[in-house]
Amino acid sequence: MATQSTIFSPELAARFDKLVTLYPLRRSALIPMLLYAQDEIGYISPAVMAEVAARIGIQENDVLSVLSYYSLLRTKPAGKFNVQVCTNICCMLRGGNELFEHCSKRLGVGHKGVTPDGVFSLEEVECIGACSWAPAVQINYDFHENLTPESMDKILDQYREKAGK
Amino acid sequence: MAYLTTHPDVVPIISLRFGKGAISIDKYIELGGYESTRKAIEMGPEAIIAEMKASNLRGRGGAGFPTGMKWSFVPKQSEKPKYILVNGDESEPATCKDRLIFEHDPHSVIEGVIIAGLAVGAKMGFIYLRGEYRYLLKIMEKAIDEAYAKGFLGKNIFGSGIEFEAVSHTGAGAYEVGEESALMESLEGKRGIPRIRPPFPAVVGLYGGPTVINNAETLATVPHIIRMGGAEYAKIGTERNGGTRLFCLSGHVEKPGVYELPMGYNLKKMIYDVGGGIPGGKKLKAVVPGGSSTPILTADEIDIGMDFDQVGKAGSMLGSGGVVALDETVCMVEFALRTMKFYQHESCGWCIPCREGTDWLKKSLTRLHAGGGVDKDIDNIRYLAENMLGRTFCPLGDAAAMPTIAFVKKFRKEFEDHLDGKGCPYHHSHEHEAVLA
Image (cartoon, rainbow over all chains, first blue to last red; front, side, top):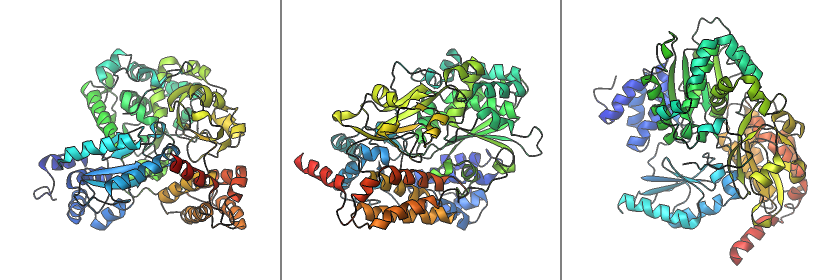
């Protein structure tokens, strides 16, 4: 058990210690664990995979098999702010594609690209559940809805300010 | 934050406490919360299931299976523990209703889970939220903690001697996990791949125990049915379609939003009156009545009541309540392609007809939309889709095939207009407009 030498913060490690006890089977904690680990570390690095596997008591290969299935989990770093533009049907009808292109031009990167300063990454995503408030974007976990290219610019400016760059 | 909208025809049952601060347990109790659970403890399992059957509540996830009947399939005696599983993986494009419930009334879901547990003899419930809904997970975690603190969850709920535990859980992005058996796999920490049925979850489900899986909206409705009485609730809807449901209006309408309307509400009225009609004086071309997997209806087919039976009779499905309006400027080939791109992306790859079918269809539609299609492509698309139907473990293959068949059948002319290198007749006009603007 890797609790003595953990790569996670003490808070997250404590959270994981509790998480595995909540379910009838430890393995049920796997997916939330990977997501919370990614929130802290930025992506699922080999070290994250190894520690999560040890905490659950499964092989690293099993962890890789599971994480490759879920679209929110990534094995490469994203930008500090991951801009996820929905272009699914409801957003498409209300300008989702145009919004994605606008973001792409504005940030200078394409789908899954990261800006050179590491502040932003861009992703075209499937339905995020904001259909009645389309077009919508999720930046990390925050929803931004009923967007226009102009309001999108303001939001990106705010995030850039937050990043201090 | 999701926005609240209303209309004079709205019948607030599930949305009764929306926007009233019911996120805090004290406010929720002040608004009559947790009375239904107390009542249900006194009623006992048989009486709860009888009320549920009387309510004519049908599953709000999409299939519309009668909830009371689903609960009655769980065996009374079981060696393995029984479980309640809330499907809050809401991922069907056009559906954004469960989000409002978790955001404004999380305790109604907890009550629904407890009552379902009382009805079938389960001692544990899981509330599975899609990974994208992280802010809702925080709300749900807090609500569960508060319910424990009040003694509404735990070893001795409401001092009744009955035990019930609830756990909230996050996914990590996968449409397929919204399917009940894939949901169980995911909750067990695995890839979300569907299981073959039978056995059905009611007999062998989560961790091998009998499991009731219900959509979040379905369970959030349960305390209201116990409060009102099943017969009273049933009166609101139409025959065999009790109560109200949250309809998510989106696309080309003036006032998109989530509206709670009685089952059987007229679709045309929903678009033109509740939704305020089509923006910019444009004409309506078509409507997707219940999420992206339901066959499209043309503008002439929408004078129907929105319940499971009437929409079924019209050749489509009520689905998850996601109503999308498409105006005359929409290219149906592009719309079909975007729909298929989604299913191709989300197919878990387990069943070959779905994995290969969605990929072929995406490629064919891409080529056709770009103007590289040939005459026989159109029939091929339909043939491919028809051969996916019913040939997969889970309904994702059907969900991709059914709308595709309808697009070709109802808008064949538009497909033909893309042939012979002509390209998309709509796309050009869009580009033209953009240039002029």
